[in-house]
Image (cartoon, rainbow, N blue to C red; front, side):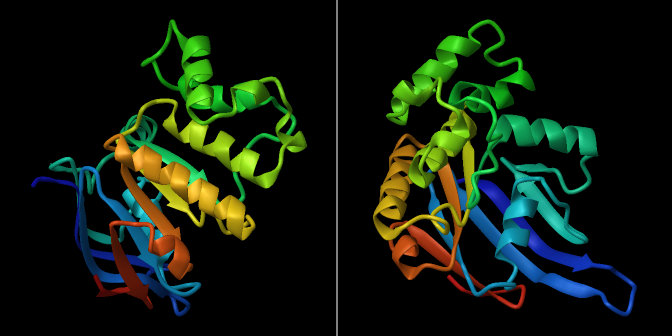
Length: 225
């Protein structure tokens, strides 16, 4: 089966060439196929979020190769990477990264502003996505009026609005209680069941157990699969 994501011998060095340089990732190779649901596990500072940011084209490796759907994007320009971020990836963060003084509708709409995919059908697209997440009745609510679980569902709706192939979640349940966290991971499983590739950074063994696969990172090195 062809890989949707393939990393080969990736290094990420912060402050390269300086006395305080840090190897965040060391000779890391990794791949995922379409429909995978993978937990990226490790302690704080192990390199989990750095890996996710490189996969999501938010950051670039110091060296190594990155193939996205078979295409080498290692040397892609910032403009090209921005287009890939909008078209191929949906992002979910621990602290939601929502605009608190705007409505649920406005927050979910944001990715469509930068995309021409649903140019003439944005309102119905947002409505459909909110219904899918069970939060259509909240569409006019201000984000700062919502519970943590409701906010994370809004974040998931925003991640799904462009129908990206890959969903990247960085500690998506870290700010939630156990029951709400379980609801969110079940929601991500439902997303995965539609054929989306889902990668979840987590330090929770319970959350990792919901995934089809897991990788462990320790001091920037892939330690086990």
